[in-house]
Image (cartoon, rainbow, N blue to C red; front, side, top):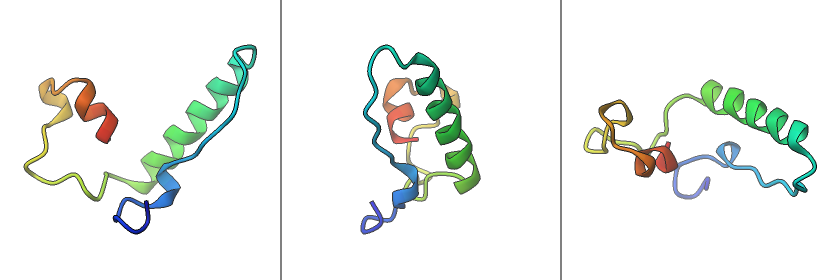
Length: 63
């Protein structure tokens, strides 16, 4: 991720069971805070679809 300019801080892998719903929610909150603190995706250019304009799931994956 660092090599392509996104930054490795934006990606984490976790191994959870379906019984760990509370931990999943905690991880989601932690990652949301972490990514917000990092700011916008550095690879998302002006020609990329705007998520607010209804670009859908494709834009969400890139965010």
